[in-house]
Every structure is written in structure tokens, then in C-alpha cells.
Length: 448
Image (cartoon, rainbow, N blue to C red):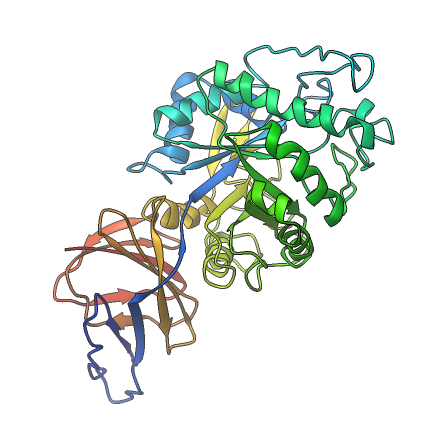
């Protein structure tokens, strides 16, 4: 049986070519990590839990709540996510797990009238989850608005698209800033604030339209009002489409001053290259299309664990993203969330999508820097990172159907394998050789 062999350049050491075993030897594949060639700094990986999904979690028994929180945020038991994205409400609560509660559900009497804000300290259980995440060490909290309240919009509805009325722009900016102050009152610092979600897509749920020029103009209004919070923009519904928004912000020096992170989704188009900015960029929302609940790692359905691992790899290496935020952490029914909550049995199910993300998020920590990495074997997707503690992380997704051997691992290394049968299965490297199983994701952590 043919066995491919991989050698690697790591920590400035030369690649060593080791002959393959067996009579059908071909030229060995080579992974090269160029530690002196550095790319983007990593902000982290995370989840969204908007549209009242947290109420599903809170309705579970306490022991199951804790198990799910561990799966999300614990670095030993789960993914160790470092980003939590919250939804800013735009209307009174509708049907369960639909709309979010607004902090100003009624028109106070016009854009210049004194605002009449309301706050219940809970925000559809988002405060509860945010506090729990903070206990695990999460420090990056992103608040994003799908829409302004309906009375601020031209269509009079928080749903079905519609544009923000020009006379309400300042009032809307103050509304968003007040949301961050309410969270500060609860002990949660909103670090990043977004004023639009998929501004180029009209949805039957909460949605609002902005052109790229309008988004850049509004950033100049919100920035001075929400000082101390990083502005994110513009969460277009496709990565290709997001480029127009980034270009508009970059073309306006004042808008560029305030927008610190450029964001895009990948529903309409996948990550195919960097956004046109030197600022940080995030893939801030996505899950794959599908109409069933799928827990598998590799079934070819397009929303299994392998599909997610591949998407994360592409975002990091093709898009140079600093952050990756998945939609959603948990939901119900035929969801493509990481977890499925069963309201009838009051339990939950875990998909391999969670472990695909965990392979990156648990080990590649905020502040890490992506290193240049490549593989001559086309079946291997490789990325590499250096954490602030000096550890190096090499992520290797073997998309092929044959095992490949990395034959020259240097330093004290540990592998974590994720595939159909394993969820970050740990193994110490001995003899400098690591076998990369077919259709698997192997995380190699090198210390010393």
C-alpha cells in the first residue's frame, strides 16, 4: 500500500525529504512553514446567538446548560470560543425565537424628542449567556443590529428591508450607543458595534437596506457618538458583495477613521480573497444551506464537519480574516447550528461542525499570527500560526482518501485528530512522525 510522506520546514529548520515505504513510492509531498513570513493577526473565533436562541438553552436543566456552555467556551472540554456576537433588538417580541426585544419599541415623538429607552436587564437571555461567556474568559463581545426600529425607517417596519429615514440617523446612532451602555451596566463591555446586517438583502425578518455610500456616511455619524467602541461594517450577505462596502468606507477618510473591522458573510459568495482594506476583517456570519439536522463529519452533504473545516481554512488563508463567527451556536429543528436543542426531551445533540471549529478556536488564540504555509500535495490544506505564548499550531486538513505521513516533526508536539470517529483526539508525537488520516483534520501543537 502506498504511503505518502510529508516533510516540513518549521522554526527555520530545513525540510528533510524522507523516502516513502513500499515499492510504489512517488515523490513525497512537502509541507513548508515559513515562520519569518507573517500574515494577519487573529482576533478569535466565535458564535452568534441572536434571535432568542439563548432562551432555548436557558429552558434546559442546569446541568445541560453547563454542558453546552462548556462545549462553546471551555478550552479543555470544548471549542474555547473567544467571540460572542449579540443581536440588537429592533421590535417587540413576536413569535418565540423570532424577533428580539427593542430598547425603544415606540416612537418617542420624533427624531429630536427625548428618547424613552427601556431595559429589562435580560435582553432575551443574551445578557445571561454573555455573563457566562465572560466567566470562561471571553472578552470580545460584538453587538450588531439587523434593523432600526420600524418608526425610524421609510417602510415603517423593522422587517422587509426599507431604508433608514435621513432625519433619524443621529437618533439611531444614539440608540445603538445606549445599547452598549446598558450592557456596561450589566458588567459586559461591548467591544465591537455594528449598525447593519446584510444591508444588501431584503428579508422577511428584521432587515434594513444601506448602499455602500450610505453605510460609509452613517459610520461618520455613529463613530463620534459611540466613542470607545470599535465600529464594524458592513456584514454584506456575500464576501464578493462585501468588497463594495469596504471600498466605500476606505474611500472616505472620516469613515475609515471609525470603522476598525470590516465584515462580510458568505451566503451569497464564498471567501475568494481579502477585502480591499488594511484594517482587520472578519467572516462574521455563515452556515451552509441544508434542510436536515446532520451530525456527521464527512457525508458529502455540504454541511458536515469537513465542509466547515474547509470553509474556515479558506477564510483564514484566502481572505486573511482575523475573526470567524459561525451562525449559530445552537438552535432547534433542522438547523445547521453547531448544536441542536430538543425542547421536548430537554436535551441536545452535537454536530461535527462544532469540532471542526474547535480544532481552530481552541488552539489558535487571540493575538496569534498566521505564518506562511504551503503543501505540494494538493490533497492537503495547511495553515500555521504562532501564539503569543510561543507555541506554534499547524492545521492540516487531509481532503484525500489516502493517509499521508509527516515524517519530520521537530520540537515537543501534540496532535489532535478530528474525523468521523474522533473529536480532537489527543496523542503525543514520538519519533517525529505523524500520520494524517484520510478525510481528517489534524491539529499539531508544537511547544519548545
